[in-house]
Length: 560
Ligand code: HEM
Image 1: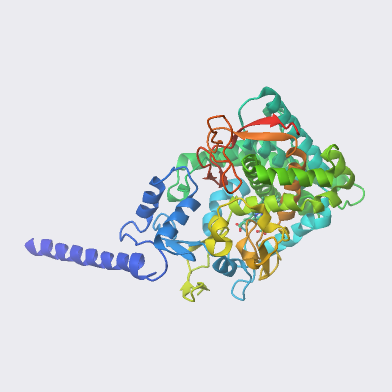
Image 2: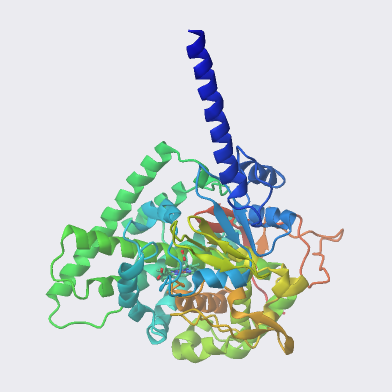
């Protein structure tokens, strides 16, 4: 008996020693020398993430936490976060030089580093066949099919529909201006971009800007699904709530069914048409060479439609919200922007009439407007990319200081928020709203296929000595898996700003509200911005969104 107990004890000691050694290897030895905070042998970096979260408002997006931890470590290239066993090790990329190595096409990865398996989080929203998650030849085929729907000439042909939907947006804001009420700007922005994306993707009127009871089923179900992805403080990947997952699954089924019935209807119409059309909506392109509609084709088509609906409205709405906010606290930028709109569209003409008559020429001349959009996307990128090279791939990246690091089996997260504020590139104005830095370089289009554009662009107009490398601006990501809808987003934003910026004065309420002096006037700082009572920030709700849904008042602007 005594011997058995002794043996058992010895076995336990050996097991404990072995477990400790193994843990020590995985937590400490395996990635020793790679930039990271000191790992805790049992908790990895969970503890440090928690500690940094608690240093500020816990609703803030995890990007801010990653950035603060990286700063404390003193790294500006990459920073590892070991959150095993909750998830994979995360390699947060903070430098454009590393980000380019992830997003470009290489011999090892002809269509850039594969997407991360953790992206399955968004499956209920975009479906399992989504172009966003697809890999290899399957992705290549999908991208080729849909490229036609995003060719510049075709995008321009959508201008009149964008103007038409923007008119409804103005009606909604006019009503708020008359009522003088407080509202969340995300609502009208999301509904507007949903309306536009419905026209582009399905050639349908979604009536998203009407009262809920009059909206299309697709919008109603999709809104319910998206709002079930409530703010998760970036910690969603640490645990899974099975009840919430089930609820989301059910909401996803409702979206699926509404979209599938619209697809069937469109398919029947296409079959009944006597001659073939050259329609370029995502749905028409999906169905163009389908002879039989079986369950599999229906599901694959529904998943692509969902992907475009989601990717195409949510991000653009965030861009609009941050733009209206930054303009409301930046008098110099606002005045310059309004002067450009007066100049290009005429002081007294209705911008919608001008855009409908000579829209292509007008939007091309809106260079300052484009610079504003580019700067907002630099400061507040709504999305990033997560990739993973499977274990055993031998995927090495080179850090700017020359060290080579193997990232096999890690989630590699190109953190656009950090990269696009990098002081090594943007100097001490990295956190400031300075659209002028893009004048002379308002093009937002990535070189596409191979993503190896190394051209350097002027940082500040006229200052040829200060260069911004192309990869240091990447809100649409770069390389083969860059955003297919970037030109559409850009056109939408220019049209909407052209119609709204001179019509309204936005006034932030609550977070980010202007600080006033004793006479009730805003206080302008040395950077030409009004001081605010508290900083507004992004939270994580699938994408990065203003935490308070952008509470605002709006007034009709009275020109002097
Ligand atoms: C401001 C607006 C937008 C931003 C910031 C944005 C950002 C991005 C980013 C960062 C990616 C890469 C995602 C990843 O690698 O996981 C992406 C991909 C994608 N975006 Fe956008 N996007 C915007 C607008 C749009 C629009 C208007 C559409 C469609 C009409 C769209 C459709 C897509 C699709 C389908 C992909 C996947 C492309 C592929 O993998 O081939 N996006 N977007």
